[in-house]
Image (cartoon, rainbow over all chains, first blue to last red; front, side, top):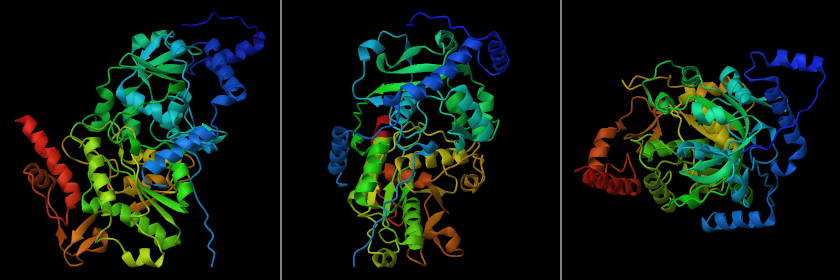
Amino acid sequence: MRESKVTVKIPRPLYRRVKLVVEGSGFNSPTDFIVYVLRDLMGEAGEAEERPRELTQAELGDVKRKLKNLGYL
Amino acid sequence: MPTTTLIRISPVHGGLTQPVSRITAKPDLAAWSKLATLDVNDNDRTSLYRIGDGTLSPLTGPMVEADYRSVLDKGAIARGGKNWAWTIPIVLPVTDAEAAKLKPGTEVALAFEGKVFGKLAVQSVFAWDKPEFIRVVYGTERLDHPGARLWTSDPRTKLVGGEVTLASFVDARSFAKRILAPTETRKLLEAKGYEQSVAFQTRNPLHRAHEYALVYGAETILRKTGKKTGVILNPLVGQLKGDDVPADVRMQTYEALVDGKFLGQGDMDEALWRSKVQDLNAQLHLIGLDLRMYYGGPREAVMHAIYRQNLGFTHFIVGRKHADAPYDDKSAIWGDFDAQEIFKHLGGELSIQTVNVGFAAYFEEIGRVGLVEDNKGKTQVSISGTKIREILGQGELPDARVMRPSTAKVLAAYYQKVDKERK
């Protein structure tokens, strides 16, 4: 189910700070925390197609048909 | 003289410009089926689809731990540097065994009765302190009420949060065409040119006094602004407790009311509607909302308002004892006004406006339904719920001053069938 993982190096002082943040936060480890933060950032930057979007013409047509069938248009 | 129409549709909750859309017309079911599978129940699936269609915007999946804690601690979720009102966590429970296999950063397929319908990008797996959840959401540590039993009867003990992507939902229920997503209701409001709109939540067949809440709410905002008003009968058709009337039967009663143009007949302020050149029944729309009940009183009232804001409505009617379900000994969990008062103390922003309405009844002296607070000392026409049930079970219709015949006929047929099956 999972793809293999890779190792990413980060400065040790930063790692120590992450460890402090993680203690008592509910994250199981610094890795879990870093993955969470990265996913959050990447989600906003790289997944534009998954963000709210305008309806396509075809979808708009479907909506109008549905409302018309209900007698609302 | 030309008139100017200023269509007004509520903004999406959480500061979004469009409702969340996590339902794809082109699901990669083959790829999803290769993932580890997480089986969910009917309640879970319903909530996930309301996330998917944007009714629960700005959520993009079941709550991660940070949102869960924020809801319990602050009554809000944080988005874009702001707090937005949110009063009941939207959770996806899992068993301990399932939780042990779920790791943040991975994906799992979501399945119902063995059939994959979506995937979840796991972001958070955390312990579920049910006593705390119940104490905060319901405002009581007692467990002898329908709301608490939703959770105590669920054997799952952990929660998983993340982002969902779902395949389209094929709804085979008889009333499926009446269930509209935020993109559809928003298009309806725009196409009809409504300058304001008021939604009424119900999970019950409508007695005439109950139905009056919608009439009262619509007339309150119409009287105040004179604006073109959309009137939305917006029943919940998701999972209810066992003794509630099933959604298909309720929808038949609502359809009879709407198709017959009976709403407010005999009870509405006809002069008001005429003076504003508007027509209550012509501006009435029956729209089903497929979500579960939490039986959560005040906190659920806020959630009901959030759903309606995401559907685009500008106003939401809050009655006394909204979403109420008492303790098993019939004593009240919440005060009569708690569901109205909570909106004065929200933990975050909420755009939709509430219209408070009190108890109503038919009064002999005025010959119509009115608010109890406006008709003190007058004679109420009322029949107990038990008596109405008995009358309907006999195939007879109760006093039309209490329940319209169009509603009663549907219920009589239903109860006769239920009683016959019990024998």
